[in-house]
Image (tube, rainbow over all chains, first blue to last red; front, side):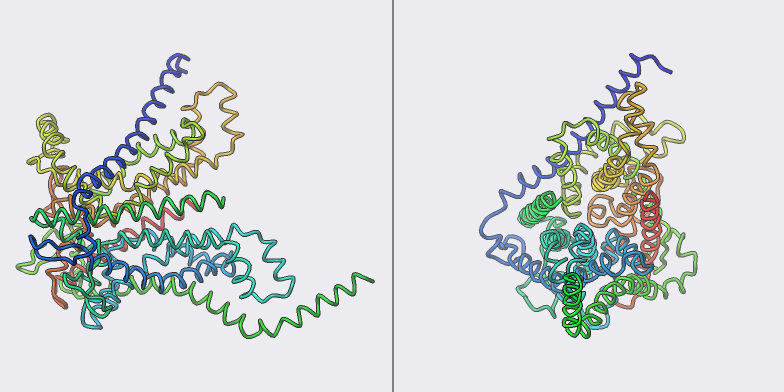
Length: 277
Length: 322
């Protein structure tokens, strides 16, 4: 065994390196945020929110992209939240310990981390090809498939925190299961479930890959779900890779908006979760 | 006597309420099961549709599609070899870089950081996972790629490329964009996932066995290395697999910084392509029903199979810890 002095020195060195690594990861976060602020803030102005995308040099904004993103996320939530909520409830209440429950939990975990671009390809095959074109519906559907596993996971986790005694008390009064779940368990886990939905919104808001082949993007003003629809991530992707300075500037402005939104949702939901536990 | 009466009353209550549940309950329970089964069907559908969409390409090129390194849209000869290689290469770089960082940060968060700082720093590191992929792509493209091309790659090429064998990793012009840059950016992206699971595992180590080690005079690092990490080893391997799975399917960040060249090269600096970046890049040029589109769908199927295996393995390893 090495001498005490050497072991102490090793201990000290590793602690120093580890602290350095933690500092380094914070530096990366700060660096990304700084880049976004430095390049996004100067480009941010009222025109970003009041004008729609326009050819380079024509002084366009991102209004149609922002509205398109909001619509698609809204529809995705309307589809994904009920399905995710019920599936999460299934896992926590009926599926516990059954082989179907275990299989669903496993598949959901895989879907949670599955490459999002493949969800885009899947929806392309499922909705775009048969119905003859890119559409807001297809984009919303792709985002819904992103939303579902997030909601399932948090709903199950949150329902598992609700004491069994609470359910038993309700059952003992003769309440049917649907009443126990809706009036007792869901109500007790309400804050946590809402947090899961917020996290799902944050996840869906930044997703670009699933929208590439589904809602495609749209440079005009369109709020029809049956037509190709603009979205903020797609507009950023299109503009960032362009050779035009004003387009690149708008891409940074859009990137700043998305990141601030997504990080705020994340911090908010973490605060709620911290309070619950 | 009192007890019997209240018991009877309770029974009365149950029978009085039963009719409300008799019809609605099976419907509700059916709905729960339906949504559970739906998730299973969803996965099955995704696999089936990607496979079915790519099947014509597999028929056309045979099983050699999997390793053929030809990708020529002009002559319509397609093979997945270059992209499969690029996907694995860049993801392995990401894991190799992220792994020591995650070990260090997890050590810091569980053993070194003073109590009140632990949560805020942990949350800040988790925020790295929340930043959307496309933001990493832009940051990488506008900030990291020029830095790599100007300051990192030229000296590395000068020093290391003449060395036999490992010199092969450092060949080529300093373009900035390429495998290494993609791997480094993905390392930052998967680091929070690996770290979070490491911390969770390390916090579940029973204090008793750690204290026993401290009791015989071990230093903090020795306890971490010889007690905590071996205790959670299986789940930690699972955490690394999760990081790998994430990196394999990463799309937008990689598309911006990998250089998008459908050539195979062993060099870390060579531009390349991953399955996901190729799909994102070439899809707009592929018309419905074309052989190219079918080849891209087949690529997607291959990526799904690879990520499914890695993610499934990760899940199993994390669960066995129980």
